Length: 203
Ligand SMILES: [Zn+2]
Image (cartoon, rainbow, N blue to C red):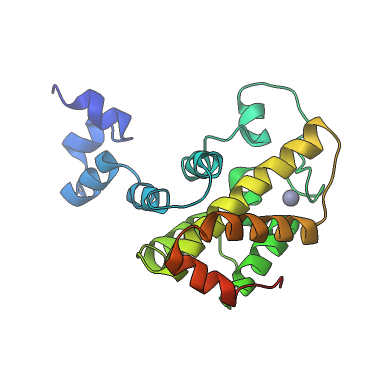
């Protein structure tokens, strides 16, 4: 069967394909298609007024490509697995965005600042929520996309500052910095500027 290499790449063995009594075309298609929410999440990166470096780090976070400590350890790089932000849990993409108590607090404040009252979800659920509620062209959705990218970028930057330079910022300083940057970037567009005038405060 010529297709076997594609099926194996998608995690389906030739034996499963030929003999499995519960073989499903839909399941096979979904496996071959890959992770659809990730493709949808790319919409978060388009029409996003955040800086290119925010969007680049956001892209790496969507695809789990940041050099987090769990990945470094898988590559046999010897390092302390602990998250440098909370100094309590192992560092991973899912932990940093936003299960870590430090980034959880920052993201919660950034949501409150936007008038969004909800719990913080896991990284996959956060992406699904954003895809569902912040894909439009209105000011609220555009500011949300910027806020998410900014929060991811400043999380990664703060993580690197603590690992490589032993420098630390408080969550209050991080929240202020993200909001100030969103104002600077967002006010260039009249529709967003109007909404940002309503958000002229720190949570
Ligand atoms: Zn942590």
